[in-house]
Image (cartoon, rainbow over all chains, first blue to last red; front, side, top):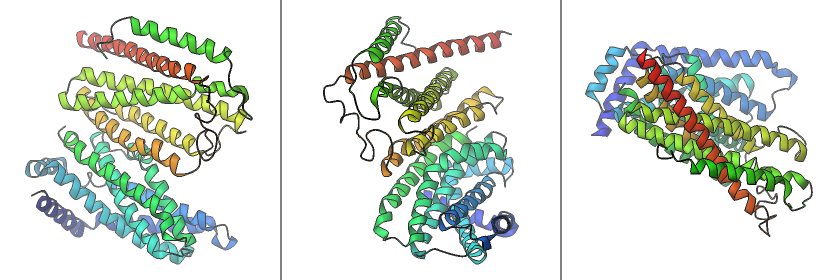
Length: 222
Length: 224
């Protein structure tokens, strides 16, 4: 029941995205221009971009991309249409579909972002498999956290300052874990060393998704 | 918290704190290298964190109760408990920085617990920014209750799990002597435990006063 609902809603989100191509194209350009700005301001030839800096810079770009991409998830549709969905579907279905859709969007954006970032700024990653796992988990946790936060910010008049203020402190534990896993992947450390971080990240994700499912019904009722 | 109208627990708080201040500063403390007399910060810095967590936990409980019943009275308690918790957090971070300057040599040493507490304070400051962006009382109460619960769920891994994954400069972490290691004769414990209770009760007292003030404001506004 819930599964079918989520599937239908996800299909709707993807269809809407495909017809408008607003969020995706806009965010793609956002990632590209940010990477170019970083490239120019760092002046790579002078060798300032050490691997830790490369890593931190990449994830900060992704963090800002996520805030901007996910902030649109409740903005895109008019209020009247949202009311209509709420009559048709359960709140759990709506939030789950949004989380999955945003995770897919973030995955695509981080993928494209990484490709472009590596072309422009070089790619010092030694264990690309682990790095991709970190990207997968990052996409999932960014979307889970920011979907809920964007729902809250939307009720408060949808300003982007509020989105950043509310979201950044909450995302910090996840971001720290992701950066640590990515750093291990860059140094090509043995994968068993990253197991602790991976498990913690999964646990944080589980907490956030559960809390979102419990709280979203109260959020949309207003 | 409405049930705490009796005066006895306020008297208890005052007595315990009086005891904490005199005994904490005057009684004999273990002599340890580096820490020396700063070990007395245990009675003033650590209870701030215990008090903050206790008050924030109570605030979340009131938020949950608000979402279940929709009574504005409960939201008043939630916000003032969070307020008192924030005051404790700020005092905790300031006393910690002061202590760290004399033991670790710097006000801020990128210690995971220091960072985590700074982030925790940011979360609750954001909670108050969120509250101020609503006009309608019930809307404000509901949305900020949702954020309160969501943020608390995100704060717990930050405060309890992350500092344990990396080494910290704090006593008891990463090979530093902990509370148990230097407290064999329980000299500190007989002051520390009353201190924790006393400071926590003081926080409750503070919050209950603020709740009464807020209730007065609300009734005055209604009668205008």
